[in-house]
Length: 135
Image (cartoon, rainbow, N blue to C red):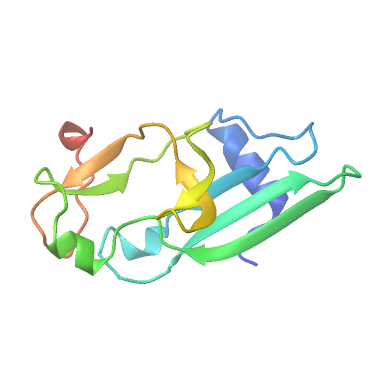
């Protein structure tokens, strides 16, 4: 594991983000973008997703997964939106996702609210995190 639940809790507190600690199965889902890539498109699962929650007995459970928090090469080069590929802006998005059907086939975590994203349309190998391109 790269992190501990306590480190995640401390990081959330330092940003004044809400971190659920009292109710059982009130799940904290946190994505951590790999800062070592310095905004380069890596086309890799080089970020981290953490899940932490209390179980039915009130005991803490903590899990980590490799993930990506930014779009891969295919989507950078083949824009679905003329304003550019979407790159999630760091922040807290409480209540932004819920369980639902993915492609109408299987249950998955699905977005249910708008999120703030940077739009990068120049199709190069570096993500542009420009405030003027936030939508």
